[in-house]
Length: 333
Image 1 (tube, rainbow, N blue to C red):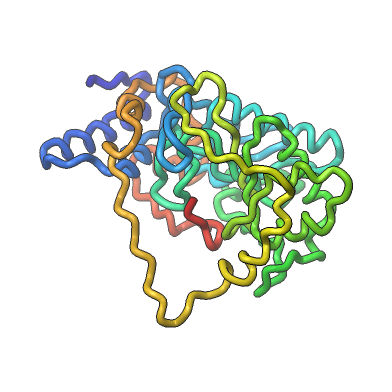
Image 2 (image 1 turned 90 degrees about the vertical axis):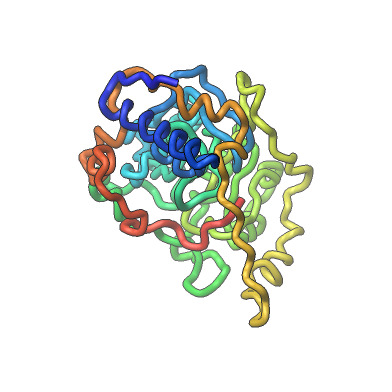
């Protein structure tokens, strides 16, 4: 396995992944999948394809969302997590344009999508692995637009009343509902994750056609952003589909969330047993080829173009995940 090196950064990413594989081979153990895929900062020069499941898979031939567009800005550029299938990138661009055209939302702030080659991330998510997930902040793009540096620590904002599970009407308006509805009505969208309090608000304020509410699923966290997940797309025969959301608007299933799931555990409850680390051998077999594939072209990534502390990461300087905020109560899914 001999990595191509169209650029210094591309070569560095490939060499880093190979180093993990070599070291693991010497120790007669498989490499840690998080380490392998988080070391990559270029997309794999393979046909675009989602491989595996949303929480256990990788991304071949990933496309990168531009850091800035007419109606969007990508956030936390240093994370280098704005990759997806070309379909996913086009979905975000089109959603932002249509929301602006209709006067719903002036511009999207786009959070994490996937890493350049997908796979598990070192922190923040268990999904987002196959290029079909994207986080959209529940905050309009401000005017003036944010600089690259400002996007590193621009604060998240919850739409819930502090200390409650209820939406804060001083923040929330029909525009929030209309943006989520616009996303949910796209045929490519499989489901949208929001906080149960947001789901409750949507159920209470939606009249007429409620079919789109079926795709909006309550989940832990997700009160500062909503998470869009697309169906497995054509050209990805090795993508594992998620269970259907069934029928109905899902508004009758919220009591369990408020009365049980969101309540603190009993004082004598045993802590959850941590899951074992995902190893490369645990992933779809094609992901080994994705990890070792040459890089797409020689175009610098968003990291190189951002002018932020991401540049330090791109040349191998220490990068501490705790130095930038992440959404609270991140779920495991």
